[in-house]
Image (cartoon, rainbow, N blue to C red; front, side, top):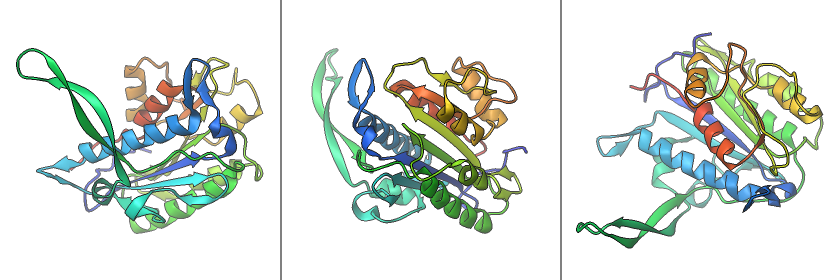
Length: 278
């Protein structure tokens, strides 16, 4: 399938993020960085949401080229937007842009106009908070995503297929998730099946496996499970991954195992890469 459908306000794209919020996400993301997995993932998603609002900005407005959902799974399964967006699923990107839960203030250096720099306060929009509690009901989360995907495909049968990105640090605690993962790709637009990509966030104890094209060398059962339900990267995403230095082939899948902080950021960047905006 081509994955070349034009994305426009009349035919927007669909992005669904599944975020593991189990108790183990309280652990540090890798041995050398004192940052919890939950914090690293939340920061990466907030950064991506902001970048999407910028990408969709035209003529002083944010155009609705995408609708976005962020679904957490841990003690509960459901949407995790904060503030005015609390409890909502797929939301137009312009509404996301207008309704961060709050602005986090940070100090940055800016030019003073005379060759030097001064400190200035800069606001950073926050939509998703880090959470770490409960088990890992990945099955339920994937079924939740499938419901969103099914509804989207029904309403946008000619559009770019929905993209689901699952970020987790461990095995499902509510049964084998492969069937639920494969069910997502049974929903097909005229441009191809819906896509499911999976990122495993590690504690930095092993080398990452990035965008493999086979199960050869995968270290354990969890990695085989996540690989088996990950979609093959479309051509344009594969080309972008190659430009970043990844070794890819026509069978490369949207899958990373033992990812660190930089892997999280690049995984989200590659996995949400689409073409043909109008």
